[in-house]
Length: 261
Ligand code: XBP
Ligand code: MG
Image 1 (cartoon, rainbow, N blue to C red):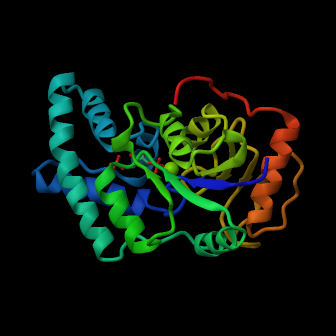
Image 2 (cartoon, rainbow, N blue to C red; image 1 turned 60 degrees about the vertical axis):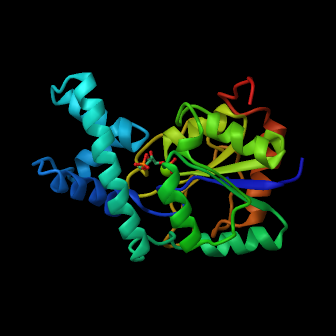
């Protein structure tokens, strides 16, 4: 099947938003509530293993000895403050697209490939961010607020496929993290990983290709090329089409789940 669409993850993929975006917003929320807590980059990198800002906060407080009920209540209150802080950062232009993303989007559009988003990020700020950085670029946007279970569960990718009315074999996912890669593979999509400074040292079992950026050398390089595609970066539509063809020839990606959409 030909490449009909590409589904992009948001945080860490389209935008390098975690350390200087979400982490800063979480810390400002702690300060706003008069708490001493602050998340340094290395601690936040570990906390990124917990998808979803509310769950991440609740996990942090539970591991600090707070009761589960109190941790959840605190997390819910803090997440509202954090999201308001993040909205302000987005409105001020503090979060931008990763280098090379715009060029890939233009190339995909000229090849007639449809664009979509599947993110764990909660609804409010995702729309504001995409509206500012890539207005009207994405035909379908699925946020963490629309699914019952977040990545690595494949629910957001199943919903994106359903709204696109496409089969997994026509679509490639672009992710940055093992959590996101697992979600895409779980929905039967081939997954290309564009790693970032928080995930470059991670393993991405089942990824069809791993690169270190959307640009060309020397900024970006191939990190893992299990299908022997030997792409000449920067990443373009032809590379994603080649991934799809190679995955189809090799059989379904590991971890593909069957199940209702
Ligand atoms: C990344 C996430 C999100 C953000 C924080 O999502 O796990 O939780 O870290 O955003 P993705 P919220 O990589 O799938 O875009 O606080 O809104 O959850
Ligand atoms: Mg991500």
